[in-house]
Length: 171
Image (cartoon, rainbow, N blue to C red; front, side, top):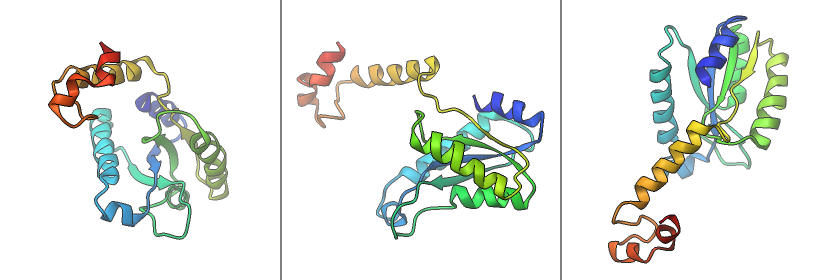
């Protein structure tokens, strides 16, 4: 999806990819939550698979609420930076699997308006995966693989795995 959207956008103006994920307070990450590292690894792997020469990309975070310091940079900051650099953007909701308020309102309306205000020469967005058949099949394969093991991560023991209701439903 990203590669197709990139080449369509590039017909008008070479875009910078903004991989946006929901933010978290910094103290949550400092306490050991692996989310930010997982987002970074995911983006690293995606950019490798895309293998587009000269690809410009950034990771950014959105949906900050409350007074705490949140991980960054923010998606707003990166859109403003793109305007200053006279660079079009292709927004990739990397940590959102379905369309909802953070994609349909925040990305499609709020951030598009911000891009226009800051003279970003092009603004496009990759749709969320939602019900893409390949995505759904991958999820199903991962679940079936996990359920075929002797150890149940939900029950946290091999003994309990035999009686696991999740495993019985899958069988």
